[in-house]
Length: 405
Image 1 (cartoon, rainbow, N blue to C red):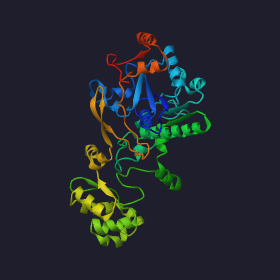
Image 2 (cartoon, rainbow, N blue to C red):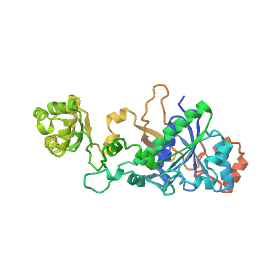
Image 3 (tube, helix red, strand yellow):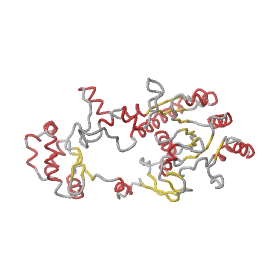
Image 4 (cartoon, rainbow, N blue to C red):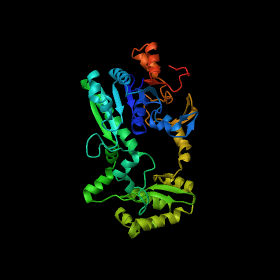
């Protein structure tokens, strides 16, 4: 038994924000059916690396899902979608605002056939406002939210956050928004429409930065790895790499001086005597700390930090992260079989439940893999399904491969 067993979701999303949202819901047990155009499908299907004609990038956020390839611009395709919508609990889409209305699959239209539907839209800038009609990818949102001005080294060019942070923020906002709407429906029977955007969701994560601006008019700038309010709290160079140190409180600072770098005299040193003084003299502090840390390798300092009870760790490259014994022990890298990619590795599930542990049950589907199966479920005959294939209303990329039900 999984938390969302029995919940049916139609997924009209592509790239990352929407698919990330529906991936998490599918991990929770929801039956997610991707409705894709053809012959291309979700745009992330064209992102490499490729194995046997299938993209690895698509496989990551689309596990535990089914795929129906459907021409939504045709009347028959739209009719099929509305039949699927009748039986759905949730619909998630990330078209540019106005597209679903033009296609005749918007919330108001779906609501006529399914009063209790929960319909979630994800867009670059939101459904309203002067920028609503603009296209909005992650990098656009990173620029608009100010992230690129507060990332990187001081005085450097604007830098993108290393992951698609606004996409993931929007996907996460959609997840908790949908779950909130579903709880409301359980209590009242009412469905509803909800929407979020890459800009809104990313901006909502700027908690400390907004406090500094609203409270003191401060505009956050790039600080490298430094914290804007605490030190030592950054990455420092070592003999063979970098080590992170989180010793911002007075107690941890004193432990760091006494037991890690073995400079107890710094505890009473005037320019480092309290947090305010350390922040005033952060440039000197960084130089003084690195002059010591650079004498030994990262592993040496991580061990000393751990023994002293001061938070710290290595600054990994991504391959080191994925091969770290702790990451592996937490089952954050798992293997599964894909019908085209073969044996693949994927990221594990970050939330560990005691009563309803989540699971990665199925690999990402090929384009249209479940088209016939899904249409049978809504009552279409084999003859009707064959006719729809002939009329190019539906599609299956590998019709010669027997479906596995």
